[in-house]
Image (cartoon, rainbow over all chains, first blue to last red; front, side):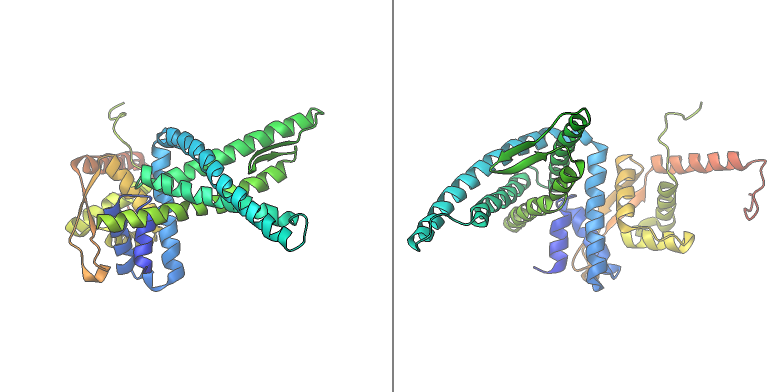
Length: 219
Length: 113
């Protein structure tokens, strides 16, 4: 896929399709497309600006969607983890034992869990694109904010409990840790970084694959 | 207070509206940005410009239509903007307010009308 089409696809998840095409057309005419760094900076900044403007203009619009997405995410985690963890671990254990070993090494048992988390996020991105075409950017940003708010809320609560002389160690796990709180706000904030970096990227990748397919079939 | 409920304009919104008025029928992303740079030496970020245009359209101060696709733009159309009557009224109000505020004061480097 050429970069102009890719940029148009990305922008069409933050604004309507015709507007996305005209923005990319402006970038081409303005010579922004000649320099890849400048071009992608232009596209990302414009897409983020569009998403942020629409979200700020009506902050509650994506609230119910985010609630539904969290439930779907939970279901997808169960599905992928169920399928991957059980099947992969059983297979790996069988092979490993046939080689004369007893138990799998610790890191190997983590791989299916991490993979299932990534696949759940990717599939959730596709779900967002199917349910909210043209508003994927808002959905992804809202979902990331919801996760970060949950983590920060739990982190502040546990920090206050530790300050009051208590002891906190809270780990919420749905196959992979969803919330980790040990009274140390820095640990929680580092954990929250996942939801501001890799997590939205996985959702975006899923949403882009679905959007590209639906645009192709519409054409 | 007269016109207290009328929509207000930020500084950049006024600049964008005036640039569209100057460009008349040829106002779209690239030309608006160039016009702003030529007249004010400000180089607005494209993201900020598109957001402002969308906001002005939401407020009913500009209208837009899509032009024909051109090869120079990779076969993509221009989004052409026009200032609505509401937008013209808002610019007039803002300029009138500036003139009223400037009346009776002298600022070095400012030519008073």
